[in-house]
Image (cartoon, rainbow, N blue to C red; front, side, top):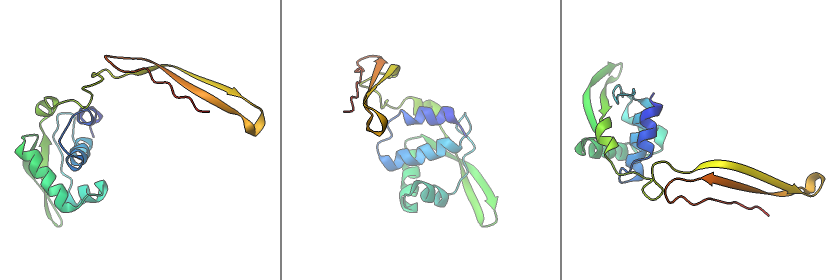
Length: 144
C-alpha cells in the first residue's frame, strides 16, 4: 500500500472517472515504486463499483498510455492473476488537477467560530481564513 503513490495519482488527470478510479485502486495496492499490484479485475470491479468490462477497458487504456505494465502472473487456486506495475515517472508527467490553484493549494490558517443565543437555540458563524498559494481564493463560509 503506497500513500505516496496514491497522493501523486490523486492530483493527476487520467482522462475519465473510471480510469482514475482504477488507477487509484491500483496505486493503493502498489509499493512506493509502483510494483506489486496483483489484485483481480473482479475485485477491482467489485470494490470500485464498476463493471468488470469497464475495469478491463480502463487497464487496457492505461497500458496503451504506458502508465501500467503487466509484469507477470501470480498463480492461485482458480488459475492466475496478472501482476501489474505503475510507471511512476510517466504518471508524474501527467497534467495536474490543480492547474488553476497551483500545486501548493491553500492551507487553512485560522478557523473562527462565533456563536450567539442560548441553550439549544445557539447559532453561529464559521469563518475559514487561508494562507493561499498562487491564485487560490481565501474562502469564507458564513452559516446563518
